[in-house]
Length: 92
Image (cartoon, rainbow, N blue to C red; front, side, top):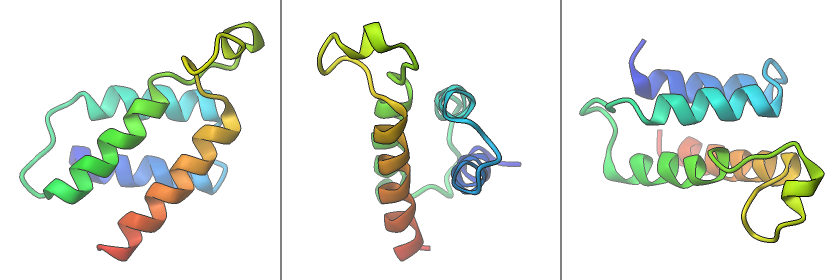
């Protein structure tokens, strides 16, 4: 499975409920740090990186979420995944 395919897989299965938010964020962040192949165009790469900026700063801890705009909660992650998935679907 290419890195690109794994990212699509993770998004799809997160939205289906196969992954909890913490697991999704860990897997997505780890995967985006791998070298993406040439099949990822600049538009999709930008979307993947935009999502990774959120997933790498996910926190399930209330005390961290109170620090301001440092961490993201589950609702923010889910909203961003839905937004990115819609944009990716438009450009398949």
